[in-house]
Image (cartoon, rainbow, N blue to C red; front, side, top):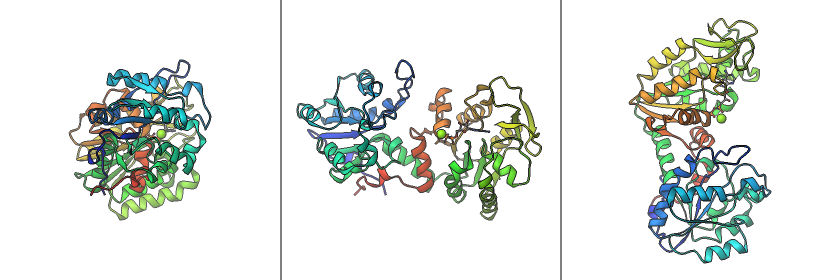
Length: 396
Ligand code: ADP
Ligand code: MG
């Protein structure tokens, strides 16, 4: 069911509490903002509220302060960046609930923007504490959730507040949901899902669910080794989940029953030791030398995958093809990103790591959609809904 958005509710003169995901990556020693794309992603919603004369109260978490005040996780630098990006002044508060914030909110004029302090300075945020949620809700007349990246968590600011305020989606939330729903319910076919990442166990539900929806499934990354092993091939010292072998076998059988091609790499880059500068070899995946680790997908596998993906009208990619953090083993993942960027098919990048690679290679604009929420988009594909989305008002 589509959700109401900021456009479906009168915001003029109203105090609007906007939950955004301003959990931006910070540089470890200086605390500088390394990538402000999450702030940019919420600008359409904030600009809309400014233009429509709302009194805007923004809230977010930042990092993992674990319920305590952590000085270098304050929202002030974020407020400064937002102010630069939107070219308006942005006020900050020393907390996210309480007297001081309440009196600041009272002085807000139409179009003013106030950013509350890091929500996770209070343990009650992640506990979804009702009293904390009520104190947050007291600041506002309307609640807008634009934090797609946090919508898979039932926290006070994503679920709790909704009990007290009319709740609608922001434009980023709307966009993310539309893309995911189109992908799940009425994709242009053929439809492929390319899944990578370290472990089968992280992606079980995704694999199971996708199997029943897609026209082909392609699997790379560390998790492929568990599938090789269950087919009786040796995988050397590659990452294996022994307790997932029977599940991997079942998945392959299920794919056969559903007549969904399940493609695995046919060659791999292997090393004796996982470290930068290791000497690499490309070998068929049916004969991985003992004592070696699979660290990336090989060139023939890439060709195989490209050939199949070229037939598709919609492609979802979640998870890297190798240990991409080490540049030497990032070739497969980077090649997939480049390849997808050249296609005219709908390309949706779902994972945290895959999105990171696409962004780093500056290919974001060449994809149909790069999700701002790795964990949230994975969860949405697994269970087809999210707690923070469920609670928003349905379209009339
Ligand atoms: P995403 O964030 O895109 O959903 P995951 O979190 O599932 O992806 O997986 C990312 C991790 O998978 C990366 O840290 C990467 O190093 C690891 N990985 C990929 N291929 C391998 C491999 N062959 N062996 C070990 N780890 C791998
Ligand atoms: Mg990840």
